[in-house]
Length: 179
Image 1 (tube, one colour):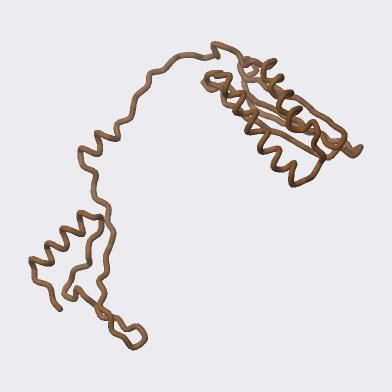
Image 2: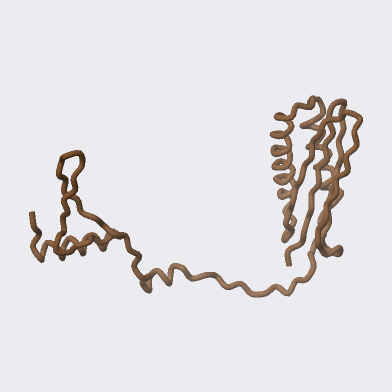
């Protein structure tokens, strides 16, 4: 079965429009053997067309001007965030017993809830980092430290430690101002 030249051109144009080009050569169809059966096949090659002017127009980016704002107009409300930390940790962990799998899930849930509530305060241009630690309380000691490079004039943190009969929790919210 051989294709005419016109049929080849039409097939190549229709394949080009769809995003692939057939490998038309002297042998458009190649015969392959699969377990004693001969099968006709046609190979195709994908391509990428150059973008048109219409695509360039749709990809225009919005240029924003500099604000020349070097500091926050409103400082991060540490006291309000401390109340959020206290409320969330107390409500989630007040009656809980320490179980490793449950506490693993609780740390993720608590950190997401804290982050959502702090974001609801609508403090502009601050990046928030929320870290929650939960551990078993068995007369051991733990020392948790964190270090960061920041500007003490605008960057700050909020922290709250919670304890019940079987577990302890520490929640930290770091607020880093983005210039």
